[in-house]
Amino acid sequence: MAILRINNMKKYNILFFLFALLLVGCEEMLLGPEPANNPKGNFDVLWKTFDENYALFTVKNVNWDSLRLVYGSKISASTTSNELWGIMTNLLSNLNDGHTKLFNENYTKGFNSSEIAKRTANDFSLELIKSTKLENAKTAGSGLITYSKIKNANIGYIHIASFALTGRYNVNWAYDIDKALADLAECKAIIVDLRNNGGGLRVTGDIIASAFVDREITYFYQRAKVGPGHNDLGDKIPISIAPREGRLKYSKKTVLLTNRFSASGSEYFTEIFKYLSYTTQIGDTTFGAFGDIISVAQLPNGWTFTYPCRLTTTPDGNCYEGKGIVPDYVIENSAADIKSEKDNVINFAIEYLR
Image (cartoon, rainbow, N blue to C red):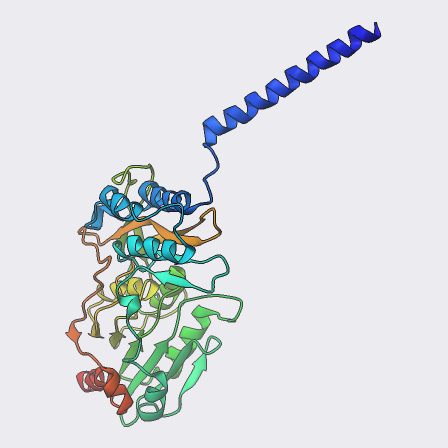
């Protein structure tokens, strides 16, 4: 009996072992084998993730399959980490997308695929505005909002540095913008300055913009990625804004200032103002980053990358991605202008409002 029990136990153990192998095999069939942590394995994960999940291929003039051959052929088993970084960033540069980014494992090195991101932000200085144009600058929203009257003019000025909302800031956006507008209520016109505002949460821009709109406006449509094909996009989702309940709208003459570093959330804000008859955009074309719902993924080697999962277009089907929104009046500053304490953009805006 003892021998029989041992044989049965052996049989049960073998059956259990085979069943476990079967489960592992099924898992690999369902999920696929774990990606290899080598140069080729990391490149393949990056390329395939974009191939199946990136939402903007329909507006990018790229052949993603050809790019895989071009850049994948540069990789071998001896490719170093620095070489792999260069190959991957060169691949992503073809997308020219401000929301497509790559970071190393400890975030000491980062890459943005937008061409504009390679420029130096030296055509605007808030300190110059404060020292030469404002009567008595005040701040709100933990310093993200700067506002005052323009010297020798009955014109208000509001600069919004960011639409971000992180642990560093204690911001009540509705209260803060209402407070600034109340303090500037006697002004006949106002300048809203979004230069060097790299965006943040779209809802933040909507909260602020809702103090200016006079009606409900559908200003963008978005289509989400719903399948692995480049054209697998869902139905149009309207992106709308309406006046905030319980407050009066600000509908005096308004100028919106932008530059090439007014990005993402700032561009949604800018597009809203395009629908208002009493607003004018002055400055330089915006950044051109409109992809929404930013996904974050990680490579086997620990590098992190981001990409947008929604395509954004205007109601008539136009897409500003990689292009930006062109102002009604294109006025530019140079680094030399700022160094010589001259801001052509705000000078033009003040004369325009006079």
